[in-house]
Length: 203
Image 1 (cartoon, rainbow, N blue to C red):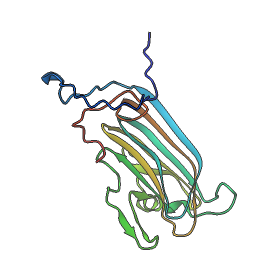
Image 2 (cartoon, rainbow, N blue to C red):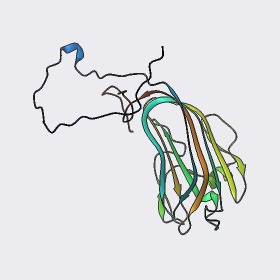
Image 3 (tube, rainbow, N blue to C red):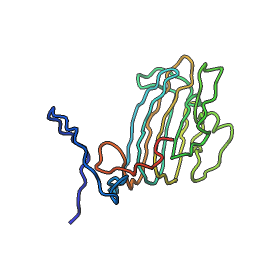
Image 4 (cartoon, helix red, strand yellow):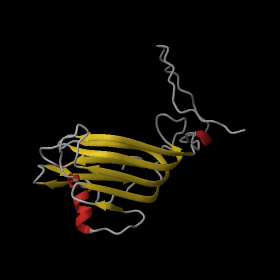
């Protein structure tokens, strides 16, 4: 028989606040429950329009696991059929624990009039990055259509993906963004699993 873990967390509140403190025996002090939460998860968002200078947080989870891939397709035609900004104006920020290609520091873009984290698709195009595990690269590199792919890397504390529109005046179109990962341990809401208090989650 396979145990099925609950997807949610329920808090029961009855209005009574219990101020009594329960003393733990020494062997229990500082230790929290940590439950394996093994799942293969694929998340996809379609027809995502990001307005000028806006940031869309696609995923931000405190968990441990392995990222199989992130796939982003962007085109110039917006969902309503009008023409938006060039896909090269899109910046992607992917954090896996303490790693983020392009670094954590925001760099001021005078053309956009804003600070930008991560890599723009235009920068990927200019660098002509090769296909390599653990690095962003473009599988389609056209003026009006770009497809960016990131494959393979493990993480122990945090997975975060943000997409930023660096165009100062127009919206950008994301045809779809897909994230596939294998989660081992979930450390916050929507799971019954919790990490140890000494985990450096968040960075």
